[in-house]
Image (cartoon, rainbow, N blue to C red; front, side, top):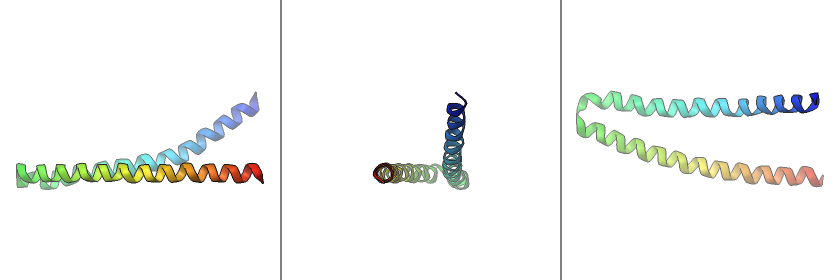
Length: 87
């Protein structure tokens, strides 16, 4: 039983080590979009609308790149798992 608890706590530590930098990166990206809107906010409604459109395009591109990175990570994990299983 203690082995399972130890493995579970190690798993959570590894997940936190991955999740915390990803969360920080997402927070910085969202903050950048907010700061862009605040800086342009005094120029008028059309400028704010343009920044909003640019932010939406940026978010879509980030989602696409995140999808590619996730797919590559899945393939790498499968390849690594197969190598360790056969080795």
